[in-house]
Length: 169
Image 1 (cartoon, rainbow, N blue to C red):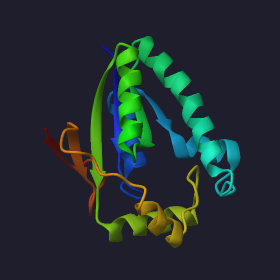
Image 2 (cartoon, rainbow, N blue to C red; image 1 turned 90 degrees about the horizontal axis):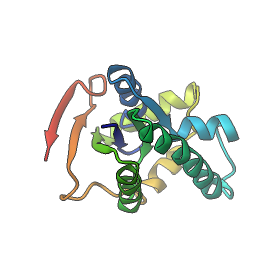
Image 3 (cartoon, rainbow, N blue to C red; image 1 turned 60 degrees about the vertical axis):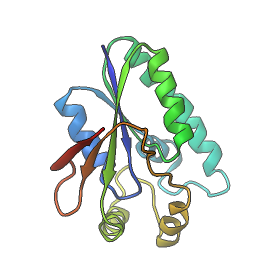
Image 4 (tube, one colour; image 1 turned 120 degrees about the vertical axis):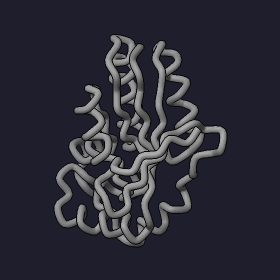
């Protein structure tokens, strides 16, 4: 049975680095929302259009990754999954495709996360520009996983993402 690997975490938690490693180890097809946004709309899309562009990319990617699952191919979804509603919607899509899922929670300290975002901002390479103010403002939109959401916890502080994994059920 194909599996969707859902990568949850805040900015700078190491989601994309972990997703890239996971796609090679499995193997799977990786979908990174930021990479698609950057490729289609540049590394700093207009703030007044961001929500609409974000949703268009989300929908386009869903058409492709659900098709991959239907064909029996694992996918790695580097989509952040900041809200419970997003996670529930994707879990429903995965089940409708006849597949299974695993949810990974990537965590690190806020200091480490911001340092990574600053480094990434110097060489965006497919990432979106994130200012310090944006980093702080977006924190209010980030919903941690609920206790009933089975996950694998990946702590990424001071080591490459995935080096200290511990399942939490």
